[in-house]
Image 1 (cartoon, rainbow, N blue to C red):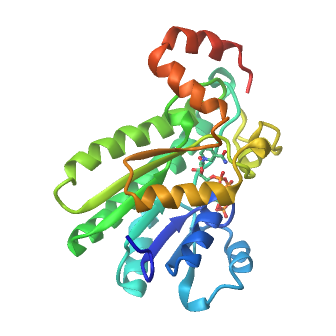
Image 2 (cartoon, protein in one colour):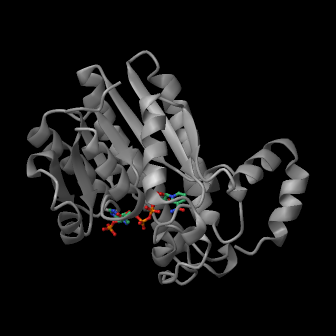
Length: 264
Ligand SMILES: NC(=O)c1ccc[n+]([C@@H]2O[C@H](COP(=O)([O-])OP(=O)(O)OC[C@H]3O[C@@H](n4cnc5c(N)ncnc54)[C@H](OP(=O)(O)O)[C@@H]3O)[C@@H](O)[C@H]2O)c1
């Protein structure tokens, strides 16, 4: 499968994994349609790429009621969406008991509902076109639980349930669905993670800087899309997440005993 000339919509493209995946697609000759709130940051980051291959949409994805209009504007301006990469997300660092319900709600709005809304309107367009590929960035937190992430983990687990079900429904309509679940990737995600009060954590000290580089993550994600994988774990081979998934699946009592001791 060639990505040359394909229109790829990417959410959360102003930094981290979304930005790196967009650049990787550009290097393969794709046209990228980028969505995030920080439009100046995106314009600056992509200034050296041919303008005809990059489009920017400044949009806050928690404005769920605006998503239909956003997608209809993109379809009017670009005619076709070949691949949707649902990537925008926000992390969490706080225990449930101390957290305001607003924090739980805010995380679910972006990490779960915005993805469902994006998928609703893009899927309709793809089905009319008779083809399309929806790719969603979840997390190993959607495969294994840990403390301080009740809302984040719930949103990411929910995405697995949602897309694994949807894949079955659209199996005969030439729509592919891929879930990519990163372990730790070296981005600034820890900085914007919501704490119990709703204030951003503001630091990047939770091991992400020892994780996979964004460039390697982007290459692995594109490989998973190319081979139309149902699901791919995106991590260093040495990432403890790989061991965690194995223990959770085959030795759950041991997993939960160890998870109580890990503070991350
Ligand atoms: N880094 C990791 O270790 C890791 C591990 C597992 C999963 N992930 C997942 O990977 C995805 C990307 O994260 P990242 O690590 O690349 O972090 P990041 O650098 O913080 O990127 C997050 C992106 O989401 C966008 N975003 C945040 N709130 C938004 C909103 N309300 N509306 C529109 N866009 C919004 C941000 O753009 P603006 O602020 O400009 O809007 C930014 O472009 C997330 O879904 C995350 O859960 C990351």
